[in-house]
Image (cartoon, rainbow, N blue to C red; front, side, top):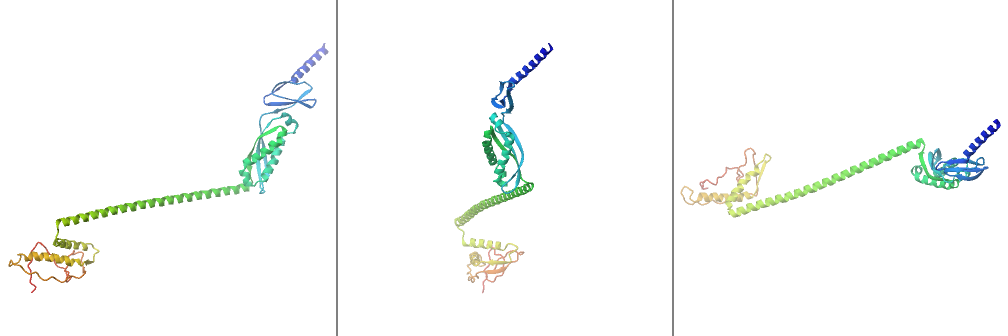
Length: 350
């Protein structure tokens, strides 16, 4: 009984193992390669699959999801003989599990080496400045080469990204100095432009202010001239309406002359030639007052002969403290004021 029991136990164990090997459960987004006697038979998709135990063998399971593989920094020489370290990131996806298994031994290593060689070819035809500013061009070139080469491997490269481009330390210092100089230059230019605009705006403001001020002064001068003209016109009309005679005008003329001597700075008084005519008229007025019944005999007294004409202008020094005094136009000497309201006796010069 014991040998039979042992055989039964062995058969049960074998059957259990065969059952386990017969039923294959493949997860979602995965695939499995089945070989029969070492030869590819089929590809198992996601779900429950039945294989022949001890005859069919599941070689490996492949993840069909998109994979992200970062590669270590690779030293690359640019066209201007500068060594830069470039980090790359590859986004790929297995589209054909059979080709990914049998067409290449290790598609991860193959993609990495292909990326390095392609990157060196692309960067070798560019200088450092172009390398730093042409990431999109490098990415597109890498993706085109990798997609073409990995197509037969059952791999689709979705994206290639340059994670970092690190030039040498000395180049980095030079670039920082250049960037700092460029920024200082732009700052100086902007400052100069701001000062220029400020000066232009200030000059335009001053110009507009001067124009407005000049216009205001011109209008004020016009209004002032109009006012003076109206005042002169009013005085002129008043004089003509009042029918002022020569005597009154001569008296007003003499009353105005002392105004010319006012002021501490006046040391010399210029008497115009018209003073003689005014004095003649005023003397005639006084003669009429004294000759018409104003004498001692009550009769008419003959008027004296007219004095000779005064010179064109007589200069008489004036003492500012003493005030202005009437001037004798013949001899240039000061004499008392003449009151036209009083009566004076006519003196016979003989």
